[in-house]
Length: 304
Image (cartoon, rainbow, N blue to C red; front, side, top):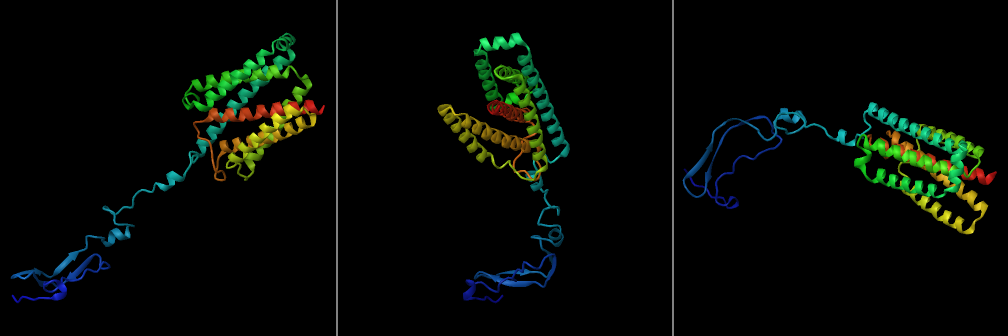
């Protein structure tokens, strides 16, 4: 064997054939012999067909260089889909929320009517004003428990027991507040609250305006109303009270639309409530409606 020396190849002989990555599948190779090093060692590659094991044509046509020629499962759709992707789950969740809310409102209206038309209870509430403040404290504690302890509001029957206690305590507090108003004004406030709540619920269901992304703006508006309420307590002006009641009614109307759209969800909503949070969703709607009732009751009394 003749020894070759190439300065560009580090002293080796002829180079092996270049590899063309575009030549996939079976190719014809005529063979090649070349010298290795400076000794009398030669490497001979016989002619024949060889397979390209890097990326065969059938795997390339299958959509990738997978081992078995099948594309991997697509998980992007499961990540992008919300928990409401199944319409049956969403309908069941909405039924649970509004059935729970209806029972809460019926119990609350019954307790308020008891305080209004039972004269002995009405007189006892006038003489024992501490009862209103004690019920207010109980409701605040139960709201904190239901809002912060997700293991309670998601576990049956603890969630229904806690929600039932809260509804009774809230009804007792509202009844003890209603005794300081005339029965006619209270009934007008109940009717106005029902009408406004129904209209806002229809608006939240039919409108494509998304309020679920306005949580920060509503929070700022709420703190502004709270600061304005402190100003009204200092100045003690009837006109400021009326303005405060109007602004508060607007605030909780927006919150009612916001919470309703969180419950309904859908493709036009930015955020939505998990189907496991039906007790928390009913609590939010109930608090919005109760706040509307108190503000409308105050507004009716001031305007009469």
